[in-house]
Length: 122
Image (cartoon, rainbow, N blue to C red; front, side, top):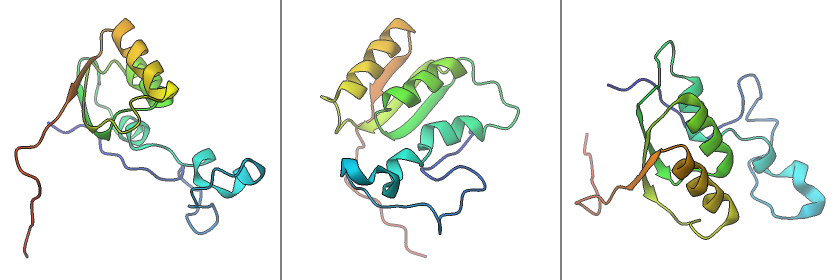
């Protein structure tokens, strides 16, 4: 049963037309890039859960969670994270996520699809 859905986006009430969607690593222009403003899909899914209790649930995500999302996942009581891509595996953030998940007994599992692609034709 699906209890919450989420995708990357700005916080409620913060217009997509005003805040930046740029991906700049320019330290002098941090307020002009999305990273300071966007809520990750994991956090949005947890916040959009309605009244459902997340204790012992499984979270399905496209990317392995960052350290900030890992903290929220653990606090929500989620027990298993299934992810498709671990492209940031060697970053300190993902190392921290794995360490916290291990300490909190959150199972991590990579999902490997059986098919390379799926096309829906309407």
